[in-house]
Image (cartoon, rainbow, N blue to C red; front, side):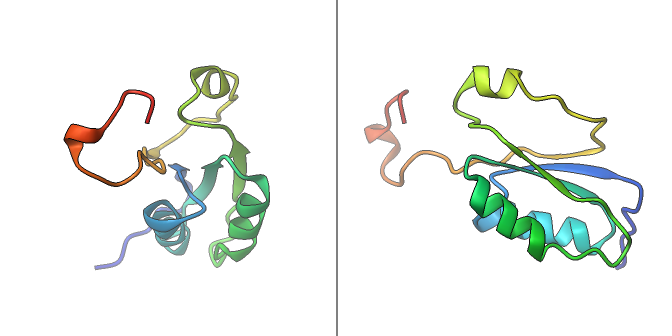
Length: 102
């Protein structure tokens, strides 16, 4: 099955590692303009350089910490068609050991 996401804009959280990075690559391969949302600027810049642009997309990145509401509130976002609401998440372990701070 082929998807054509040309002229669509996707915001991908946690986009420099793991699931978020994989989602960003798949969205770019299908033609979407991808906005990487990450905490680490150097990792965001490197991921941005690696994204495919075979559909003449304009990818970009934003730096913010999703666990900090002030950081997120300061973002200025364009119109978004696709949202991948992903983050690094809490450390692994039993749910009974989880704390709100994690």
